[in-house]
Image (cartoon, rainbow, N blue to C red; front, side, top):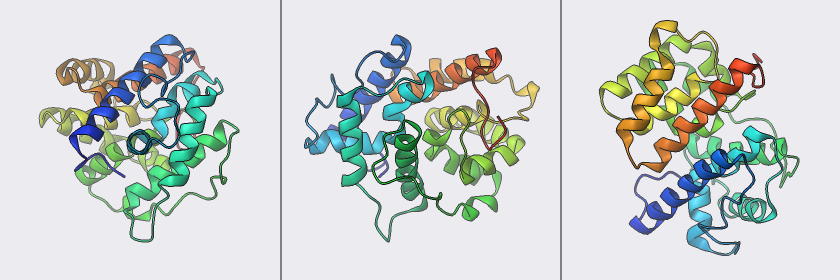
Length: 240
């Protein structure tokens, strides 16, 4: 499930949920993500849909701070995984987004069905760099420290192309894509020093204003980069 084409009500809940994720990240992972947004009812369909739209990032504070999710967050997240399992006609990004959610549960030692092997990502390998950047931005929730997936490996193998995609998105004022791609750049090696990623991320965050999903990706990228400088966080694609 992707946010494009969603109802205004759902978009509003997604916005609020993304804002809560950023707030909990700033708090150090001590607060509930879903408590103030979708409540604790795992049968709240609008709330569950918002969790599915945001995907694995709902538990991002736990992933980055290495804290076990609070029970309410975990219950709603697990329910969303089970409720919105992809079907036979689902897009590649939907399949990967769902896999990222199951992988997150596995990483946090709370598996619902087990992550299994990652889906096929060969469709990404042959994409020209503008399309690659677009697809990676849709899958930015997979850009976490130590990510071990075929998508992360494609990004790790093409750092210059990913950097070009970041610059292109900034020039096009596509702040959500720029933030998602910038987040990938925070977890891979080989990013050109001339890119000025730290400055670029700050600029994207400022220009996006109140867009909570942009803020989430930017904040995540900055958190990851700060951790990598201290050696507390590794890189993606099996490189750290």
